[in-house]
Length: 551
Image (cartoon, rainbow, N blue to C red; front, top):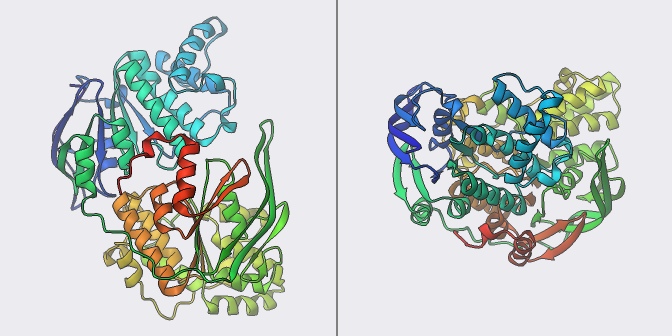
C-alpha cells in the first residue's frame, strides 16, 4: 500500500477535527476525499504532507513513518509562487534543488543539457512543453497552476515513487482550465503510476478522476466506496432549490455603454482587450456573467463598482454616471456591496466587530459625518469620493492605494466613522448557516467555507440595493452553496436587490440567474436564458467533466 492510515485523530483545542479514522490507498490509486467545509479534509492533507505533526495514530507513506515531505508532493489551489523566468527554468531550478539538496540555483553550463532534457519531459506531462520559453508572469492562471504542478511532481519523477496530494485543485478555474488540469492529472497518474489523494468540494471532479472516494463528516469516515455511490450519499441531504417568486421590473438600474478596457504587461504584450461592451441590468434582476479565465469578467465587475474606469464608454448606475465624482456617487456607493474574489478579513477582529464596522461605515450617519468633517478639513467632495471608493477594495489593495495617495487610514476613519445604532445579525447568520458563536471568533479560527460565508455576511448586513459578486464562492461545498444560492434568491425576492454575479460554478449560475451573459475574446458572445447560455459555454469549453448533472 502506498498510504496506510490507522486510528488517526486530531484536535484543535477541544474540537475534534479527525476522529480515529483509518484507510489505505494502493500504489497508482486516485483516492478522493469529499465532505462539507470544516469536515477535516485540508487537515488530513496537511498531516499526510508532514506539515502538521500534532496528531495521534499511525501513518505510513511508501514504507516511511516519518519525514513525509521527502516522499509526497502537494498542489494547492491558491499557490502562485514562481520564478519570473522562462517556464523551463522554474522546473530546472526545482530539479537542481532536489538533486543537490540545496537552494533553487541554475546548474552550470556543462550540466545544462541533462537538466533541460528532464525538465522538458516534466513540462510534457503537464501539457506545457509549448510554453517552455514563456516567462511565468505572462502565463494564464491555469497555465501557472500546471507549471506549479510540474514543480511539485519533479521530486516524485526523480525518485520514481511518491504520493501526490491535491487540496481543492482547480476549484477557482473556469471550466476549460479545469478540464485541462484534470486531463493533465489523469496523464500523470497513468504515465508515472503515482498515487493521488485529492480533496475537493466538487462531485464532478471526484467522478471524473477518482478510483475511490471517502466521505468525511465531522471528522469521521461516513462512507468509503465507488465515487458515484459516495457522491450520492454526500448530496442526499441537500436542500431543494428555492423558486424565486419575483421577476425583474422594466427599469434599467445599470447601463453599460460601449465600454472598452485594455491591459498590457511590459515585455508580455496585451493581456486584455475588452471592446465596445454594452448591456443593461434591470432593477431587481440577478444577472450572471460567465466566460473563460482572462477574458475580463473581474475587470468588468470592478468597472461596475466604480473602482476602475473604462478607457472608453461610460457606465450609469441608478441614474449616476460613475465617471462623475461627488456626493451623489458617495451616496450611491453606500447602497452598493462588492465582494471580490480575493476578499480579505481583518485577521485580529472578531466577526461581530467586522459586521458592526461594515454596517456603520455604509450608514447614513457615516456619510453625513463625512460632509461635516470634509468641510472642516478643506477636503473637496471629489477627494472624499475617491477615499470612500477604496473601502470597497480588498484590504491590502486599499492600504496600497492609500499609501500611494499619501493618505493615512486615520483620515478614512475620521471621515467615515462606523456609527451603529442597531445591530441585528441573526437573520443573516441563520441564512448562511453560521452559528451565533461565530460572532466572537476571529478569521484565524474559521474554516475556509466559514470565511467565505462571513465575507458574504459583511455585504448582506447592510441590505444593499445593488450587490456585485466576483467569484467569491469557490471554497464552498455544494450543500452550503445551495444554501447560499437559496438565501440570495430570497433576499432578491424580499428586498428587490439587484445582483451581478461572476462564478465558474455552472450549476449555481443556472439556479440563481434571471439572465446570463457569455463573454469571450473581449466581446459578448451570447445574452439570454441561463440554461442555454451555460450549455453553450460548456460546449465551447469542451468540459467533459461537467456533462453529468449531480444536482
